[in-house]
Image (cartoon, helix red, strand yellow):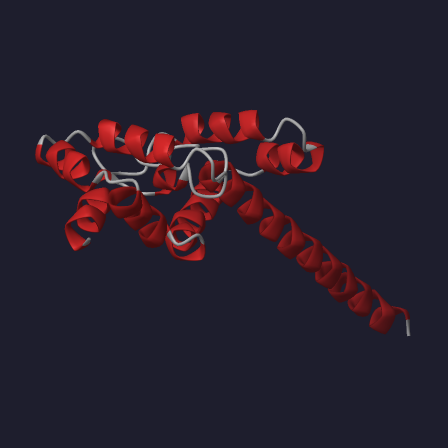
Length: 161
C-alpha cells in the first residue's frame, strides 16, 4: 500500500506545480504585454529584429516597480522564456488593441496622412512613431502601440491605408 501511495503523491505535486507554473506564465505574458502596449517598452531594434532581451527586460522591470509578484516572476525566468512572452505579446497587440484603426485615426482624423507618407519616404520611422504617439497621447491604450511593431510593419501599415 505504501508503494501505491508514494507514486500518487508525486503526480499530485506535479499537477499542482504545473498549475502554478501555468498561472505564473499567464501573469508573465500579461505583464509583458502591458509593459509594451501601455508603457511603451520597445521590442524591435532598428534592423527590424527583436532587440536586446536584456534591455527589454530592464524596460519591463522599470514599468513594473509597483508589482512585486511580477518583478519576482520576471527575475526568475530565463531569457528564452521572456523572449517567448515578448513574441506572444507582439503577435497579439496589434489586433487586440486595433493598431490599424488607431493609426488610421491619426492619418485621417488628425490629418497626418501626407506628413506620415513623407516621413515614410525618408524612412523616418522615429518621426512616425513620435507623431503617432503625440496624436494618440490622450489614449493610454493606443499611444504606445507602435512599441510592438517593427519598422517594416509600420511601412506595411502606412502603405495599406
